[in-house]
Length: 346
Image 1 (cartoon, rainbow, N blue to C red):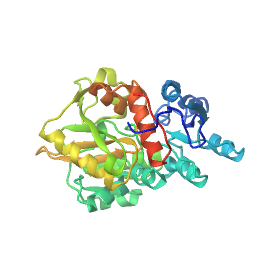
Image 2: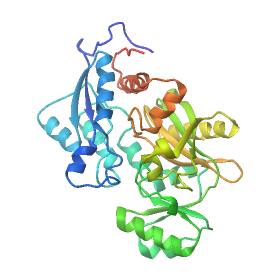
Image 3: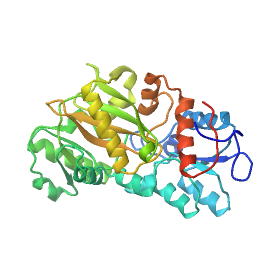
Image 4: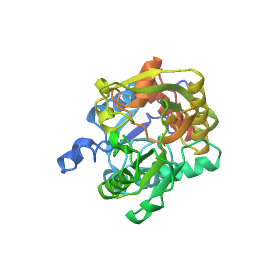
């Protein structure tokens, strides 16, 4: 890795101070939110694991917390050389963009993508419009904004329904696969009422499911590897559902793959990542059609980083890449973008 001889040098010759922004799941559970509502938020062991890598590299670590805590700290004139941002946010299509936008206002560099990248990536319909126009294969789709628009869906069955702006497979079950008009009405209304957001309706693809790990930014971005998500017989079928993700140890098998189909998935994912101008690290999810052609499904510009439970660290573990190296590489990518002299231990 590039850098200078002094591990902890900064622009003023002192240890870099790295803040950590996050939404702690336990905090929201204590306020009465449900398990699925808080599924994207972080467990304490995720924060501790990231903090340990920061400290092991010789930097200072400062736990900041969520966007409201960051606002208070900024108002109190607190500053950081870099912020390791994994804040998902709670409300609106711009929820993942809130912390980056606030940090941009104060000219403080941070990990992962900028407000535009996060806002586009969170809204799966907008993402698919952008990438389809750029020639990236993606299933035909319709965004249903209200009950009145359900009748306008004119795609052949089977279809697949999910909330337009959720992660961690929230709102996805075995019933997300739709085979008739009655099921279409039921699924759309359930999403509109439960998640208070539009439903994304896509052509159902019956082929293999892939997750592709990406590291880096722009021309420096590279594919780490491809895993195939294989549902065990006891799993909810038809989808990598919320239930399957929550209980992945018993319901899902992750297999590192590098065959021709996986190589197509790699190529599509890297193009999508670069087209969307995303930063540092993330994941692209794909599914193949009946002919074995992978199609873009969605991109996670703020991938989960729990060292045991999240897909990107699971992929890295299968590749033999340690959690320390993954987090250190993300920090180095962000520091390089910010043009801060540094050196990371690997």
